[in-house]
Image (cartoon, rainbow, N blue to C red; front, side):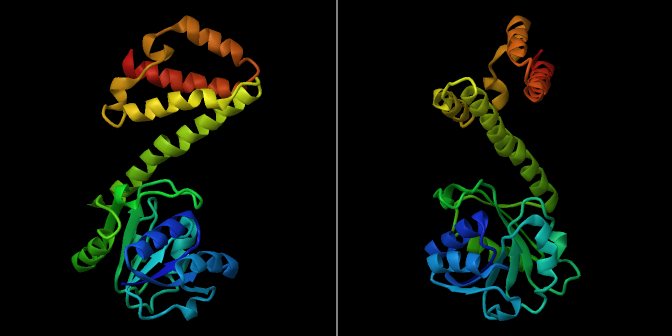
Length: 255
């Protein structure tokens, strides 16, 4: 399979590398910034370009892996391609391709967080697929199955909900890690002390429902402890608001 990658960020880097490892021929990497295209293309042994008119017309699959707000503008310039054109966004509907003149299109959304410098096992990553026709969906399934054992048909509406849930589970929780680390650092304590706790919390939900493994003062209705925490946060209005909001949500869920 001949693949062209449009994008050079975190998702593009991991997805293109996974296709390369699966035996696909990564023939081009496009980026508006040629240096970024070169950085990824050099790893994939492919051609770097910064001009859409230079896109290879013989590719089987074109991966659009750019920021969500750039997808529509890019799609509008690809109506001359004959291969399967897919975007990799969780929050962007399949309808972004409609009335753009593209014959074959779809979505390949890897449900994972990516950083260029951190390797991932693509075989364990859920790939959420959608396409304009059943034939294109079958083609996309065959391609996705070379990357992961977890391949699902997911509608645009359900994919948006998955993306929203992922923001709560990943982005928001990581921000809470940052707030915890910052709070500790300002009081000369190490975030390393929390790492075993974080690992155990994540491990629990691999075999149990999050609802069933909730702990802490809010689920116990321990107002005395929560008041002591709020006293410690008297000079931290942002953290106070977050603490109260999350504690209220936990109490409403369980009490």
